[in-house]
Each structure stands twice: as C-alpha cells, then as structure tokens.
Amino acid sequence: MLVLPSELTHLQANACLQMLVQGLNSQSGSAVVVDGAGLQRFDSSALAVLLELRRECLGHGRSLSISAMPVRLRDLAGLYGIGELLPAV
Figure 1 (cartoon, rainbow, N blue to C red):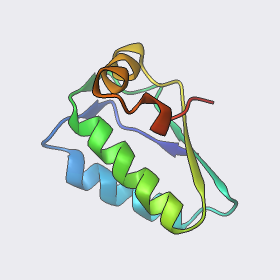
Figure 2: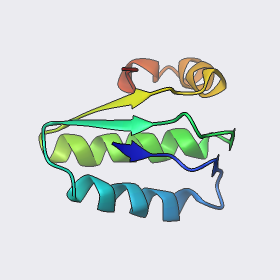
Figure 3: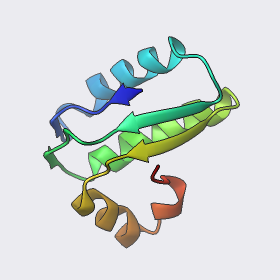
Figure 4: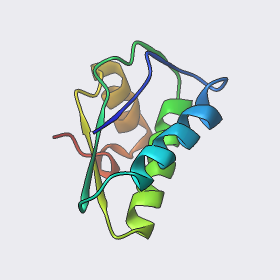
C-alpha cells in the first residue's frame, strides 16, 4: 500500500508524485491502493498527484483506489467532476 503524506500542496506535489511512482514500481499485483488516512493539509494539487498516479497505474495495466480519502478531498474531487476516477476502497 502506498501512503500519502500529511501535507500535499503545490510545494510538495512533485516530490510526492516521484515517491508514489517509485513505490508503485516496487509493488506487485494489478491493484494499487493509496492510503489517505494521514493526509491533513492539502490543496487541489493532491488531486493532480492522484490523477497522474492513476495514469501511471493504467499505463502499467493496474488499477488505483484510495483508502481513507479525507472527506474534504472527496468533496473537492466531486466538485471537479473526477470523483469516479479516484474510487474508494
């Protein structure tokens, strides 16, 4: 399982994405789960990171789902119309 940091704003987005992609490459299986339980401070960059990670997963024939996505982030995804692209487990 991949884990989101406690803070994911524009400032951390690139480093976080690199960390998640490295973690993705070290995992086996067709389903990738990201744990969002620790995510406390974020902006829309968190959605951009998750969408890019989803693209990476799909490129490797894998699926992506989010565990314990914060309610505010789920609401933001819904506002942008991308909630269905980031399914919860």
